[in-house]
Image (cartoon, rainbow, N blue to C red; front, side, top):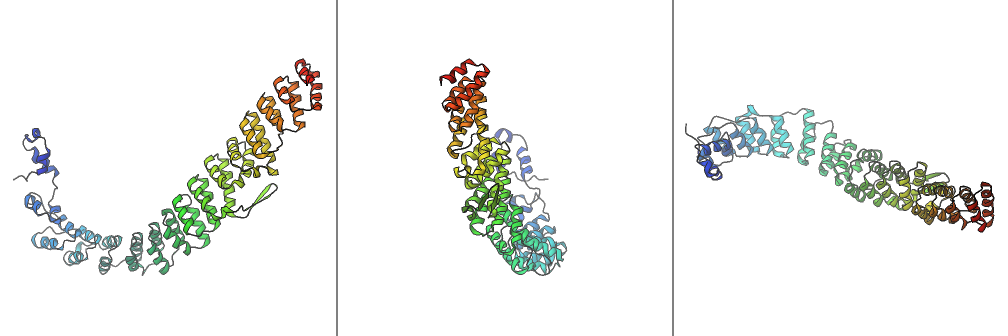
Amino acid sequence: KMASPTLLLVQHALPPAIQAIPHVAQHVSEFLLPTTIDAAVYNDLQRVLKAFEGFRPYTTGAMDGAAANGRLDILRRLHSERGEGCSSSAFIGAASNGHVEVLKWLYQFYRQLRQGLQEITEATKHGHLDTVQFLLRFTRLERLDREQMLVTAAANGHVAVVRVFLGGILSANGALEAAAANGHVAVVQLLLNTCYPYAKKALEKAIEGGHIDTIEVLVKAVGELGIESAFRETAAVIGADTMRLILERIPLKDEVLATVLQIAAKLNKCDVVQVLLEKCPSMKTTGRNVVWGSIRFTNPIQSAVAGAMIDAADTSRLDMLGILTKKSASYAGDTLYHAVMNDQWEVQELLLEMCEAKYLKEPRMASSIGSMLEQAAADDDLEILQQIFSKCGEVDVGDALGTAVENDSVKVVSLLAEKSKHSSVAGALIDAATGGKAEMVQALLDHADHQVVEKALRKTVKSGNTEISKMLISR
C-alpha cells in the first residue's frame, strides 16, 4: 500500500537529527492528519483533495459538513458521484445555520433521516424564520413542544419567530421569564401585549440580570404587591450599578426601597446600601418623631434604616453601621443607646464619633452617656471622655468619678472632677482619703470646697491616716 504524502510543516518542524530516522516524518504526518477526507471535501479544499484524496476515506461526514456550510453544489455532486450519503446531522446543521434551500433538497432525497423536532429547535434558537416556517410544514408539534419552542425563541430574542409559536399554547410564562432573563425587551413587550402572562417571576429574572429596560417594562405590568415581592426575592443579588439605574429611571414606592435596603444591609452589601441612601429622595427628610422612650417613623425607608443600624450594631458590622450613620445621623443616638445596653464598646466609640451633638443631648440619652463615661473611666480612656464632654456639654458624671479614683487615674480624675457636681466630688474625695490615695486626694482638692474638705477630713481622722489628714488640713 502506498503511503500518503508527508506534510510540509512536519518536514520543517522536525530537527535534522530526527529527520534522519527512517519513516519518522511519515508517522508524525499520519498522526496529525484527520482520519477522513471529509473536511477537505465540504470546505472545498482542492489542493488538499488532490494530494490526500487517495489516502483518506469518505464518510457521511462529507455531506453533513456541506449541508451545514450551505454548499448545495457539493451535496449534489456527492449525491451523484458517491454512495456514502449523509446522516441526520446534515439536517440539523442546515437548520442551525438557516440553509433552507439545502433543507428542501435533503427533504427531497433523504427525508427518512430527518429529525423534525431537533431541526426546528436549532432553527428557532438561531432565529431563522424562513427555515422554521419550512420545517413546520413537515413536523406537527404538540402543545408542550410549541411552548418549548416559544421559550427558545424568546430566550434568544427572536421576535419574528416568537410570533410563529404564539398560537396553540396555554402559557407564555416560561417564555416571558426567558426573555426577561436575557434582557430581550421587545419580546417581553410582545408577550405582555398578546398573552397577558404572569409577570412577577419575569420581573425577578430581569432584576437578577440587571436589564433596566426590561425591568422598566415589567414594573408597569406587575401590581404593587408583585413589585415588592419581586424586589424582596432578588435583593440579595442586586448590584450597586443596577440599583443606581433603577433609582434613576424607575419610580418605586418607598416600601419597595425599604425592603431592598433592609436585606442589602443585613447581607453587608455596603455599595448597594450606599446607593440607596444617596439616591432615595425620602432620605432628605427626617421622617422621625421622638416621644419619650419610643420612636415613630413617618416613612418606611427611615424605619428600615433605623432597623438596619440596630442589626449592624448587634452583629458588630462597623463598616455598614458607619455608612448608615453617615447618611442618617438622626438615628445614631437610638443605636448608641442600644449598644450601651448590650456593652458593645467598639460600636459605642464609632457612634460617638459620628453622631451629631444635638442627638446626644436629648434627655433620653442621659443614662447611656453616663454608662459610657463610666466605661471610659474604667478603661482610663481620656480621649473618649473628652469627646463625650465636647459633644454633650454638661452631663451627669455619675459613678464615673468613683471608678477613676479606684483605678488611680490622675488625669481622668482631674477631668471628671472638673465636670462633676459637688456631691460627686465629695464622695470621691472621701473614698480617696479613707483609702489612702494621696495622688487622688491632691487631684480632687482643686475641685472641692471647704465643706467637702471638712467632711473628708472627719472621715480620714477616724481612719488614722496622718499623711492624708495633713493634706486636708493644709487645704
